[in-house]
Amino acid sequence: MSYIIAEPCIDVMDRSCVEVCPVDCIFESERMMVVDTGECIDCGACEPACPVDAIFPEDALPDQWQAFKTIDYAYEAHGVDAVNTMVREYLEQRTAG
Image (cartoon, rainbow, N blue to C red; front, side, top):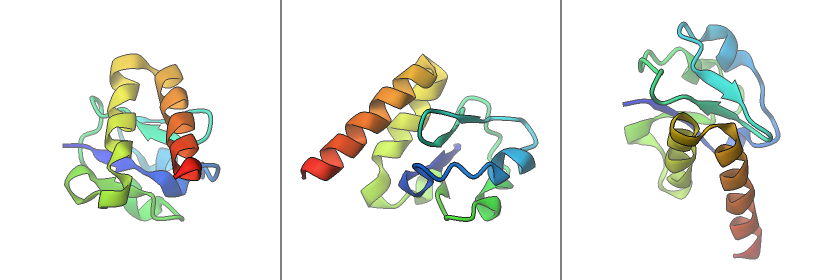
């Protein structure tokens, strides 16, 4: 299991989570921070450090932000460009709906 960074991080990108991560598994994308789910050790240090409450244990991710599970997992599999594309698509769908 991993921690997931969700919508509240978009365009905030406070790096407090990066500073407390013991394995350096949080990275910056174009509009938000993202967890490398393959590197995350599920320690939870990042969650209380986030000033906008955007970080959740994977199994506690709110329903409205389930898309961010896919987005964070995409970082490990496909890199930051995939994350950037997926966040843009998420925001387009949110504003269209």
